[in-house]
Length: 322
Ligand code: CP
Image 1 (cartoon, rainbow, N blue to C red):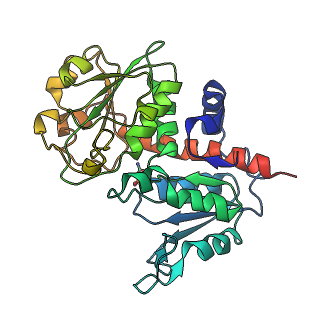
Image 2 (cartoon, protein in one colour):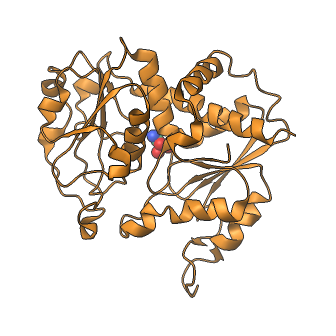
């Protein structure tokens, strides 16, 4: 695997889920694979789960992780080409990437969307530079438009908890005070479309996700209707994806608290499990009652981040073997 970005990079999903179950059962079975190998985890943005689960996954595989917080542990980096570097950014990504790549075997990158220029973000400009100038396998640790490590962990969790074949999975928008990227809902939709589930996406009008990620999912603007008979509720806020009007890209169009996931909506589900990638704002995205219920999967979901990351790194290490 040369890069981990889209669901297609993981190949056959049932094989990947089987491998995930094996990795979860015997996490240290491939410790020799990462011997004398280094993974560089580059963070342009904050993280708790991604940072820790990626380090843990690397250690389980016998690899040495190096974590670099750009702008805190390093110089501030310029990411745009052709600019006069007369500001506070001391180094360009064009040099920094090959330098970092020279110290490792695999690179993981977290680089959020700027949410001001849709074309720049949706071209995955920063991640593509790591692929082009690094010459090493690259893992998206949440980039401008995708968060594949999260979506893989979500799928592993759904596979573990589903009560029957082809569960109904609902991705619901929920309110948030700040403008957030679309990477998590994009990847969740992309992975659910590839999996054996019935996917329904619900959000207020104006929050339509990019059709490339929506795929064949049913879009339902009535949240209560969408929740009917659901087996899994996946809540997430996202800002306006600007699909029909790019000038609206990244805007907060609604803070309608009637979309906060609570017992009212959960009552019409099939005793659904509640999921969220975390961090979550309680009583904005979801009520205390729902997130603290026994049907809340947020903690096992976060634990599966290590499993997902380990499968991805394991495959990259296998490809690096002589
Ligand atoms: N879900 C997730 O990616 O969490 P962090 O932002 O804390 O890494």
